[in-house]
Image 1: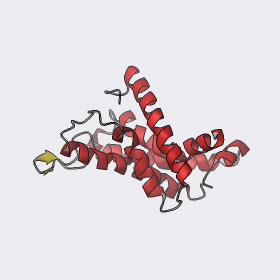
Image 2: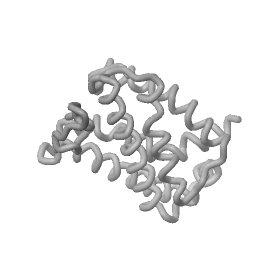
Image 3: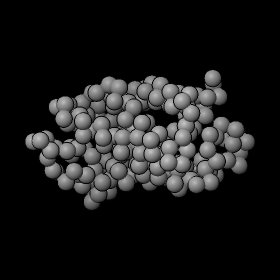
Length: 179
């Protein structure tokens, strides 16, 4: 069981870091702070909202690729080779799919939050914690289809980690909301 948790955590790292990237770069690359919905409305409401920017999307994808590259390099170390679910030879594709999937999952959730009148940054449990995981798992399935036990482990682990890390980020002043 512990091996499954560790391997799943390691497998999800590109998505985890991709999901954190927009928050960490929000004060940088101001020229890329362009809303992805270009301020367009759908049924009288913003499609995504002002918090979803080109900067966030690109930073998540780039970070996902970087993390997958590091995982590829770490395969030479037996510990990492033993916990790896993937061989990471296609690290750029893995990182792109996990990063783009994580951010796309977040964008889809944001679209629905606007439809349900939940403000940007407003709480929507469990979707706030799992949107990026579902997106990353769907996108990576182009290359690798995770087993049911990996999917379930990823969902449970990610839900718990997201809550813990979001609270830590909030108290450290990195995040504006606890969830």
